[in-house]
Length: 200
Length: 200
Image: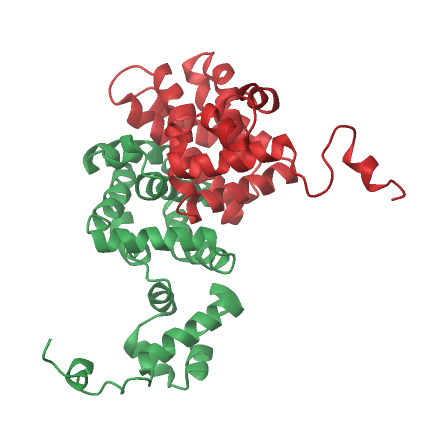
């Protein structure tokens, strides 16, 4: 409470009213994604908009998917977690996906951000196609690459549809039977349903 | 084009600026549902708000679920279709549910209303709990009543979560692999996944 504004800003942070490089990058990324879509946006163009070096983006955020996740404040990183989840026996993947998603959203902060992300992603006409493309490129195509047989893209998309539907009903609609169910029960049942898509 | 305003209104309809009984009932229902929730709202109270007889509600709309469906402009009536769908061999129910939902949304008008309903139901903080209660009372509990074994409410809710997730990804996010897939393929695959919940 007795800490002054300068100290709260921390060393090297800009003064009040001057956006930091990080903030300028986020604002520029938000504009670039909205105008060019997830696929069309480039970190180079975002750097130019923000008036920073492309290396600054890499330093502050990492890749384009990291930057997008920061823009939409995504509380879990399926694109980062997937390699580990998919690197195991196929018959365990369904349950592992559900368990990862549910445990990631156990903390109230993460859950609140996930709910905001879902509401925004579905309710906002600019955000909807951006979210869809992010999930297509960073999640669905990676699940599809792990599958064999027919219709791998469709089956991977259906996995995503069940995970998304589960999150929506548990955390946004909050239907009691699912909202109150222990993670173990949900992971077992939803995992088994997802397996029907994974094994074809 | 040459038809006058009076003729367009039709016989017995109110003049411009005077809401019809039907419109007054819809407005009153919208307020009553928002204030009391789906469970708390009564057709008697809606009639009182609208200044009409309770019989007028029955005449214009039917039951409370019919009236709610009219208020949110729901393009399919799972509560009406379910008795037929559930009245058959358990092993066919998954595919029958998916086929009913997808064929109901084939027409562009129904699809547009479904998309609006999903966006509103998830994006609007007043509508979300109303939609959830409607689906709990009119859909999930009826599916649950058809099941046997453990956790019937949870399993019925998970059926709803997969159907909802499928609609979201096919019609709102429009992820190509699912948006372009023929109804037969989707019904077969999603039907099989849903069966894991139905058989327990």
